[in-house]
Amino acid sequence: MDLNGRSGEMEVFAKVAQEGSLSAAARTLGLTPSAVSRIIARTEQRLGTRLLLRTTRAITLTCEGEAYLRGARRILADMAEVEEAITDQGIPKGRLRVSAALAHGRMKIVPLVAAFSARYPEVVVDLMLGDEVVDILGGQADVAVRFGHLPDSPLSARCIGETGQVIVASPEYLQRHGIPREPEDLLRHNCLRFNFRRAAPDWPFRREGQDFSLKVAGSIECSSGEALAQLARLGAGIARIGAFSVAEDLGRGELIPLLEDFNPGDREPIHVLFAGGSAMPARVRVFIDYLLEHHRV
Image 1 (cartoon, rainbow, N blue to C red):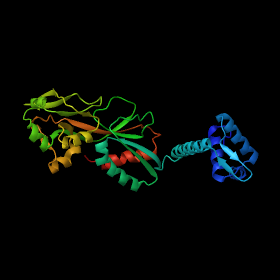
Image 2 (cartoon, rainbow, N blue to C red):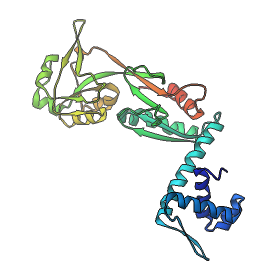
Image 3 (tube, one colour):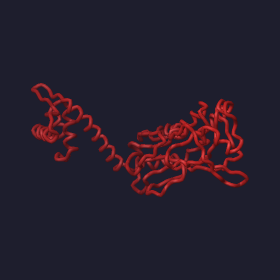
Image 4 (cartoon, rainbow, N blue to C red):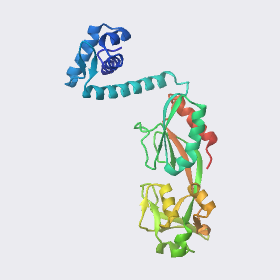
């Protein structure tokens, strides 16, 4: 143990709190009680506050000591997890942070995570569902499932599928506002759109073999495809979203497909992104392999 480092101080403090006395902590750590006392005093001096209240009977933690103990335990656990992951790279274990879009994650990734976790019980899957883009290189996630064409980056990517787009509205909305028969009819409708930066501002169409786009407008914009589908079901307007996310709604008749004769047939790739290389942890490698084997759109 590096007694001069902060992690060493944290380990000593956590052990004292656990054992309830300096002497018991010293025996567990293989130190003398005076050495433990000096480390605690040095930590308190550096922090400028009392962490422990010592009497002849017991040791109690101050409010600051309780806060320091919570942080110390968390940091020590994180350090142990990192070291374990590095030293056991051939064994899938440790925390795996996975980022996925809300609708796709709920419908396609969550069922795979359940089966993956049963196969690899020593991997703790930390699943983050949301339509915001996370920074993998910045340490926000180990793996991210993303839609669309990817910009150049040092990340590795594997394609796990693709999906088409469909324009939909609820029967109630169409009854109130009419059914658009031509793309230009959308200019008279409330079109629900994505608001994130990579979303195309126009909706694409194809007429007699010629591709063109149409600038639509509406009163609601959103970053979530699942939320746009819900808004369409509620009769708020017309949405253009991934076909996979509304397949069940279309089957139940809660949403109606529109302008399919003008659908350009554009396909959006689905990639899994990760930091590759020979030092890739086993938990990341086996999860990517699992997605490649089992993911279906």
